[in-house]
Length: 218
Image (cartoon, rainbow, N blue to C red; front, side):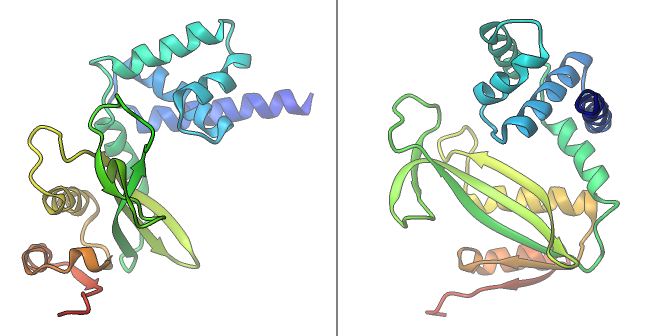
């Protein structure tokens, strides 16, 4: 049947994709990455439970066992997203032109009803402009051609985590990491939250071309 052939083709492509991204990961981590990549693609969700629910028809185990296995792998000391990030950037570098725009921004995930989730702190909800419980996000993506977008960095963080100093320091670490692996690229774009002389000096130290939206009181 065409559907069966298509399913096998998709599974094979996912396997090859994960093999490339996770080549530096141990074998159990590659298997976990393959399952989660396929589950997220099918479900359209990053929730582990939703990925497991969509994976169940492809597995010969119960939903409970599958969900438990994915949770166990996610908590494993062998699992690390860093080798996957390295593999991803290695692939992305082949498609990025030197004149790309690189947009950097702070986002948020809010959980106003949560009580016991780790690292919950007050954040400013970008949608409602109100203060809620949640986490901050560092988001960096490249824009080029006719509306082409390539995500480069997505980091969730809490101001309560050990060693936290400032949002600016985390953003600078992310930018330095990307420049080391992708080069200076084209024009880096920032919103008003980055209107700071120390941040200007940091960008100039990396010899980056940048455009920052300044505050109205400057």
